[in-house]
Image 1 (cartoon, rainbow, N blue to C red):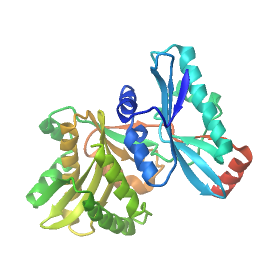
Image 2 (cartoon, rainbow, N blue to C red):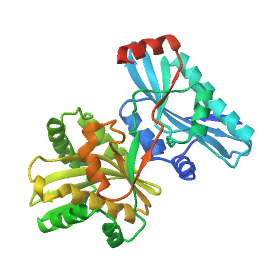
Image 3 (cartoon, rainbow, N blue to C red):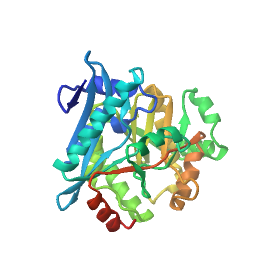
Image 4 (spheres, rainbow, N blue to C red):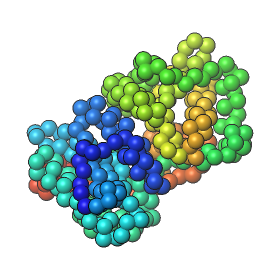
Length: 340
């Protein structure tokens, strides 16, 4: 058994292995690694192969610098395992990756390993495996604890009929009000999103990523055909822009921005409805609208939660962020610094 790190790998086989898993995710993809690298974050692509060269395990890891020569290793999703391999082979593959990450803790100044495995909150068996390796649940989540997911394999007319009456009405109202929606293939149009995003951040009182983050995301994922920028116009003025990804059977609403003007035109509904249509063209079976307020964890998300639920669908609740200390002393200091 051999551990490959950043060499002897290719995009096609990397993504193909991800798509063999029901929970395979954009955040594990080759393009997502390229995107993180373009932001200046060192990345590691780990793959374990057996004697026949068959992939047994795979993981994308990103180094996030904290300062003072210390950093965090973040793996957006879980270690993917070839479940058809013998149990002892699966376990050995996981150990190879985990031991290498522990080495990085010493050579790269990594104080903790943080991950957001797509485990359901009720999946206590899988969670117990992480706990056996020393992971603990973090009080702060990176990815949302609950997402709103819509099955979109029905025809568009049937999909529309399954939505809440108010949402259907608003989609049709946007058309009557003259909202025009386009799918942009021009990377330069990210300036439209960034302008609207800064306006949204000021209005809704949150700190957005820097403009370059969205630019790099569109460039890298766009080259792989895994993202689109959807813009809704009223007359000649862009008033809503959203970034939607497409990876395998899943489309994901990544980011959205809107103008404070013309909010009565329901352009947000029109943009999302276009995204549903694009997702179907891409062969996606589900559309993930992203995080929602569940159990009053994010009261500030109440309005956006109501908006997302209007499209039909169901909530998927995850276990949350897990952390494995790689340097116990620095990890304790880090927790004191962040306030928990």
